Amino acid sequence: MAIPPKRVRDAMRIMNASSYRGAPNLRVSAPRAKAARCSQLAIRCIDAAFSASWARIGGMTHAAAPPAPISWRWIALFWFAAALFEATQSILIQHAIGGRGGEVVLFLTELAGWLPWALATPFVIELAQRHPIVPAPTARGIGAHLMAFLFITLIAEGWSAALHMLFNPWAHRQAPTFWDTLSATLIFHGLICVFAYALILAITYLVDSRDKVARKATEAAQLGEELSKAQLAALLRQMEPHFMFNTLNSIAGLVRDDRKAAAVNMIVGLSEILRRTSQNHKPEVTLAEEIEYLQRYIDIQKVRFGERLGYDEDVPETLMDARVPSLLLQPLVENAIKHGLTERVAGGEIRITAARQGAVLSLSVYNDGPAFAAGWESNSAGVGLANLRTRLRIMYGDAADLDVRNVDGGAEVVVTLPLSETA
Image: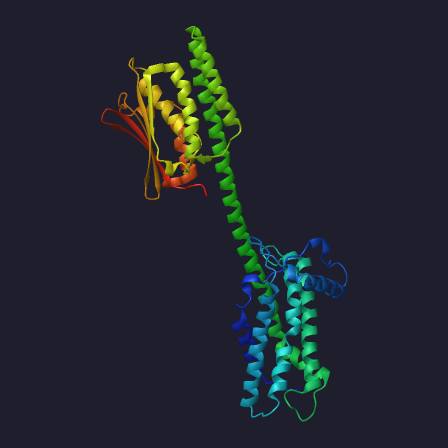
């Protein structure tokens, strides 16, 4: 059989035009334990691995995404596109050299000629993953790929030669023999086979590289999330002993003053708070839960300060389901008591307000005590506000803010954060 030299260039164009097809999912994932070992004769190795690869093609997965059960269709689509282009070019070449008739046979023969490469693709992908050529090729890996290439090329070109011998698609006066056709196809298609094999390897390594980058990005995001959770847990654990120390110190003061009933009431309130806290370590709670927790804290402080501590809250019922950080209001109220009322004989009043401003929730803690001195926060060693700032930054980033300011007749701390309600 005489194959037109122009078909070499046409076939090369097939590979270039089809190089992008199927790239997103051109990979096979299979357990290494079941893969064929290339320690035996090459033909036995290739045959065994090919059978295992194609049987498992439906289980191909993406390294950084859920399994894609239809990925084998990309391989079929890739080679069908290449075969379709080749068959169409053959028809055009036949007409260009003056041939007429037999277009259907020629088209189907050329289309079927790519079938061995399509069937061998899962095996080549698995071999590429088991014996990567880049970045550190081994002699064993190169040998395995070379033997696989030669075997697939012989099978593919032998298949093509058999089709040409049986159907004589180019309508030669004398039917071509198998060996003449095989030698001709090996000469004219040898380079194309090299391109086909190299293309499979290149696409496999490109997809694997993309998967590794995506996997590393996912792992980095998960690590950052776990780090944030660990930081939140550590900060919450830091807050609890801080509150415990202040409360127990107040109880000790009441005992020293022989105010036993007040001390007992404060212990009961503290035990109730500790019971609730021990059963809830969520980073976020509803505003209603936070108000309830704050009320128990206020009850404890009222035992300590009596009539000197005034408390008022203005929280709309519609905002009670809003999600807020756990232990948000208590440290702010504690700070207001410490810096605004403790030093005043007459005591003072604390007012809690909540308001919705579009998609933002605004919470305010006001006390009518002395104004904040310049630079007081940077010079303060208090745990509460520093803890709260850190938690807000971890949970909401730049979307949340804590503003400490002086207002007429007192001082105010305003917390703004994204409004999120419980479903």
